[in-house]
Image (cartoon, rainbow, N blue to C red):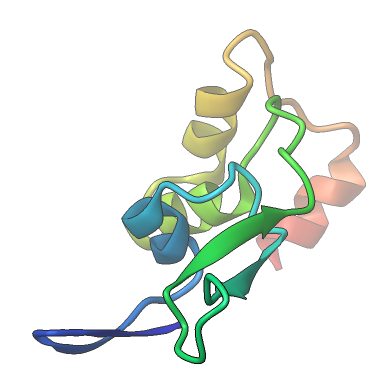
Length: 98
């Protein structure tokens, strides 16, 4: 999203839009121009299509943590702290080691 301000144009990507504008909880939204019966646009309204389920793993957050070097086990423990990871079979172990 490109945002034009008095200081210039700023480009926001993905979740930055929600952070910058306190937009809806979900990334499923669109912006509707508001003109208040005037020819020029006065502002924009966030029209949301969802609130997210509020439980479980955030894909965007997990991806960012992985980019920071977090292991998959550490990321999963963050979202599901009461769980334990274990191999279901040696076939999977051999596959992962190749």
